[in-house]
Amino acid sequence: MNLKPALTRYRVVAWIVGVLLIVLTVGTVLKYTTDNETIVALVGPAHGFLYMVYLVLAADLARRARWKLGFTVLVLLAGTVPFLSFVAERVVTRRVRAAEPQPVGTAA
Image (tube, rainbow, N blue to C red; front, side):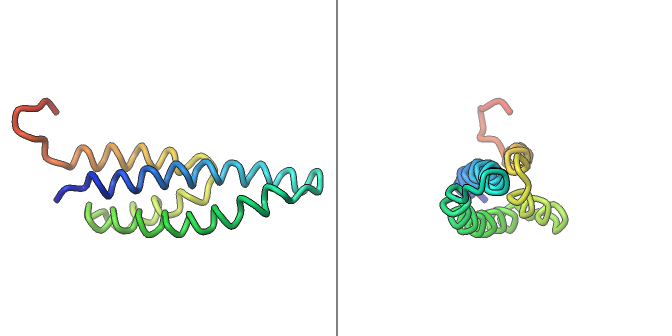
């Protein structure tokens, strides 16, 4: 099964969710230190929606790649910890690429 399209979708959303989570974390610090809620008000709903998209895309990739439940849960939770979605994206990309058969005549 060709996992490349599902992997690409997952990678794009993982990066977007990761960046938004970092911005949201900074916004939360600002909210409580300066009483400025602008960043949280703007980025919070976007991150929440895109995290749901991340969950769907990660679950889809997990189903296609036939990951074990424990690994799947860790990948799903990676969008809730700042910087962890970037780490998860790298691990997932390596795992999926290593599991895909290489075309004939190409180096692995």
